[in-house]
Amino acid sequence: MALSRRGLVAAATAFGFPALLSDAADAQVRWQCATPYPDGNFHTRNLRQMLEEVGQAGGGALSVQMHTNASLLPMPQIKRGVQTGQVQMGEVLISAYGNEDPFFEVDSIPQLVTSTAQARLLREKARPFVEARFNRQGLVLLYEVPWPPSGLYTNAAVPTVEALRGTRMRTFNVMTNRFATLVGATPTLVQAAEIPQAFAAGIVNVMVTSAQTGVDSQAWDFVKVFTPIGFTRTMNTIFVQRRALEALPAAQQEALRAAAARAETRGWQMSDEAGASQQAILAQRGMQVLEPTAELLAGLAAIGRTQAEEWAGRAGEDGRRVLDAYRAAIG
Picture 1 (spheres, rainbow, N blue to C red):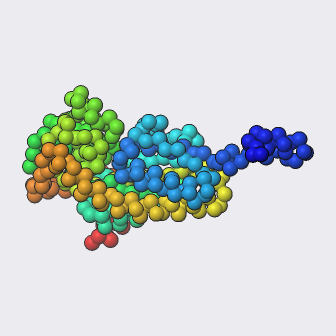
Picture 2 (cartoon, helix red, strand yellow):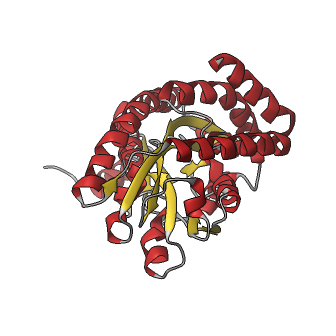
């Protein structure tokens, strides 16, 4: 006759054996993971696959519950939430934390990188400095994946940067806030999940972001034109509380790191694929996709040079070292 777990425990106790009060489910370590992005976003899909691989590798010993679309914590609170143990793992747009440390903004300098190869090179130079900062805060960086190249979302063509003057621009970090100011727009910080409401309320009427975010927010409902300008390859950083990580068995830690390495490789490929596929969706939904004019690109490059020097001044010795090393490497 099959006994229930309760019956087995009772029998063990009755016969003087130690009660087996914990089965595999009881021994399972349960973590929470917060991300500000929706389920369909490639970053979210990539992270979910990583967490599934971790669960499979450990036989279910580590279970991580994902909370997507800022449903548990808004993006500005995720990093602190991991530091304090409110959640054990998080994903953030690292440049959104520029007010905490200007160094985190390096990947959001306009026009500094114009290709995936350059984005990889810049991250190679910058990552050790990010890891050192995280380590001092009790965090461990797991992997980083860039967003696809950004573009301008407007209701009319943008032949020059002067066409942006007087607009109300959605921004998402210190660098885009400064960019809006330099082009004569009024900047307003709006998190990704709040974009449609901000446009509907007239708080903003233009934005610069990736085609992926445009699809996530259904940009065709409130703007008519997308102009791919490159602009940036901003990074999403996925990290874990060091104390929680070190509490895991060594084999489980290794499984997590191995899955993170695969997620980074996979994520960079997904980012490149998303750039083309999501831009095609914008066009299919009726948006005009206009090639940038030479005048617009020249104006953006000039602003980018200004912002790069401003950033190096704010980021200090580490910032200057990374910027100089990157520029020397690309020639």
